[in-house]
Image (cartoon, rainbow, N blue to C red; front, side):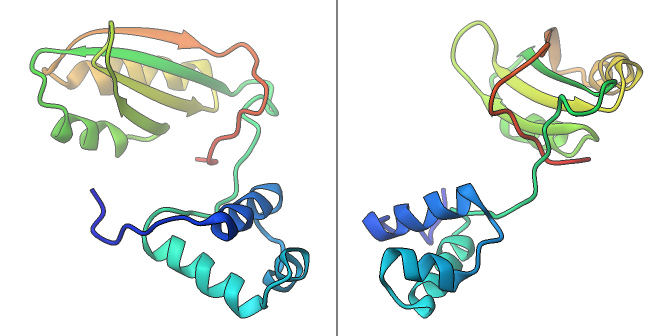
Length: 152
């Protein structure tokens, strides 16, 4: 999919692991730990970012706020032409990811909203406007371990 693909080596993987522990860690601290120069860390990290392989972002615990709601929506569609529909859904407010899948559902959409009312509006108004969608089933997350999402 991405023409700028590159091969990950052991050092790239170690850099990613350090950034996963703390995305704000200075390159010089990673370099010291991995026994390479901070320039090496910076260049490799920038290469992974420019290749759209790595993204360093802030994420929140979706269960931190008492009234927020995270859900997974299984979607069946009339035709197996996913690309355009996936793009439309991914641009909707509250959508965190859209995945083309095998099995019972054609697509899975993960959403995060600040209230049940917002989820209800998304299902009843936004998704129901799409003629290509024939069926949905919503699974509300009650709790999770190691679950992080991008804040609205």
